[in-house]
Length: 217
Image 1 (cartoon, one colour):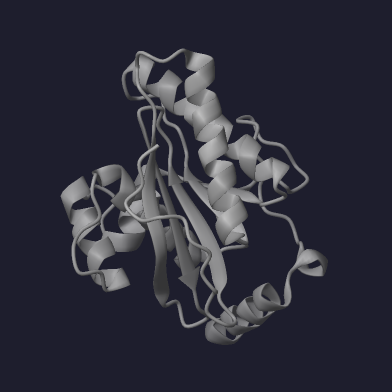
Image 2: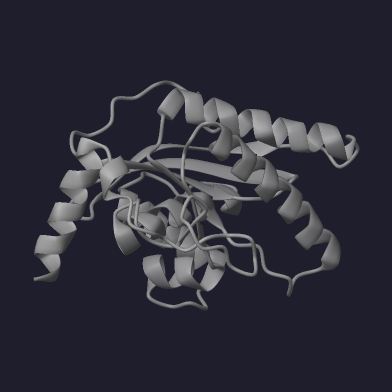
């Protein structure tokens, strides 16, 4: 596994929601961490790539992605994990590999008790660039600008992971948007839409929801 930055525990911004964003893939799995404050300001925490080699056995590749995700979850303790939904319009081998990686990430989050949310590629692109058809370079440039970074995160999988985290935070404060695996009603894809979880929210999450409600008035 290669990292752009070491995994070092970092205090979250008071009152913020910490979101882990993942761009799933077996060869390169983008992982990111963002703190989102109630004014919808995204603050960079970390970004990196969990990588495996095609020559490795499939079981070992999946295990490496699972272990890498667990490590990120242990170090940063996010409130939510947002991951890109797998679509079948790509090449079959790519979809299968992405699905394997996605499953490893979801399992790691579930084992840590972190709710998982899904966002489509076009949804993520529209959130950060204003266009659901934006290319990867445009997404990278906007992520760099939104987070106030000195340079664009590379490879593109890293920038995409940050974009997914930002998208989730902007669409619902990190806890109430996308598709949540922890809710009650199962859909045809195995994921579950969001249900009311107010009684299970942390103090920071409750403050976020209150701020969101005020902003909509």
